[in-house]
Length: 517
Image (cartoon, rainbow, N blue to C red; front, side, top):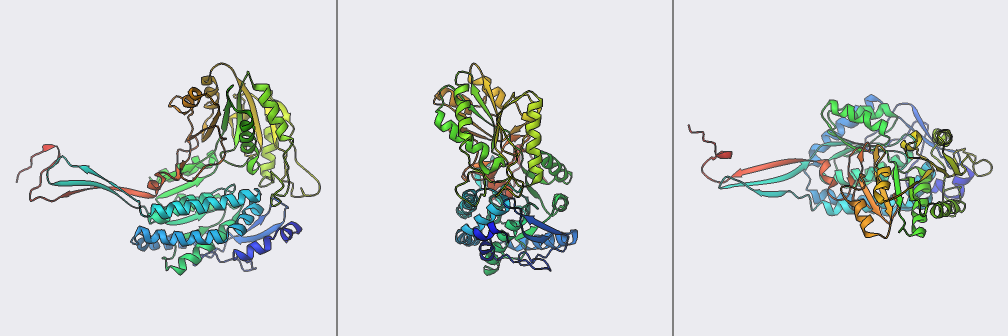
């Protein structure tokens, strides 16, 4: 263990989470043992090796998938409230282990400890939602055109759900999917990010203990580990009717094509290129808070991170200067130290992408307002700490059109009516999150109308970053069109069935057709 991990109790957190590493590998869950190559997890906080796990082989995966498929056959027969009770107990464990799990998320991924705790809180919240949902998996009734007939719809468990999650939210996104899928009666196979394998192991161990105590069939919660090749095991597997994948647009297109080949279902949560529109009637103080947190929170590694600020020309300099001044107050460093605002990027590849974006925006004619760069010296030994940067840019710049998963914020201006700002905001291929800062009711309603934001999330007087679990989360266009978490997102994890019951002695046909024998 490194000095930082000792100082901030990472070893204690791992022990509380029942994670121990031995030369022979680590058994994950009640039935899973991988025997592929070693995957080493290095913390971007200090560059130290936290631990290592074995990758999943094709043979391992086939065993996991078969076990999950067989377990589903029994799990689907459990009453939904009984499944909800298991999720409630899992939630109790999350509450008990919130601090160590949040600390592991922070240390392995690099987000601030407060954000790590917030991510575990999202898990707790979605479990609360799922427990209530377990008594509300409702259908609907309809009137039949035939006398003496009753029609209704009901929802049945779908089967085995494959979940592919990304490093930036190494536990929350899994829980958004699995908590709902479990109460819906599905089994889940989770491929967590190979960049954050230990948080996946920790969650699986928590679930395994709770499931064993409740005699849940084996395989309802399964974990596989590895790179994209391991993900392909699931995307190509007909035993997995739904793949829920979170990641880049490039990855999502590959997943969608593979799943479509076998006519499976995809739930895709892909890239974002999120903008805040700032109108002349905006509250400048709130604008700065929303923009800065949206741009630098999680070191710009959220799918909902603010990438663009579109400011009306009449207040452009005032807002621009306020945001630039706020960047001078940002404290960058060890994310376990709650005095710091921003931690590191996930790895050296992310640093290269960050530096590339800054070079490209300058080549295309942009102006750097807040210089970026890689931090060096004491406390920055991992080489993953960078300075949040701001550039004046044009929306049509190629680099602006793409999502850079790093703290690079592009500022641009608009003139005239809010429709001109909306044209800029919507002028990208991504469609995840959006926001407008205004106290003008007409502008706010225009933004929220069918002619306004084309994103799946549209906020007024709050930033683009973050979402509550009560609402369905997801985006349009090349963001994938999927919806997770709240509202009626549960329906994607189930199959719809229409039923007609004839309680008469006759057999009338639909549309008045006569067929006499």
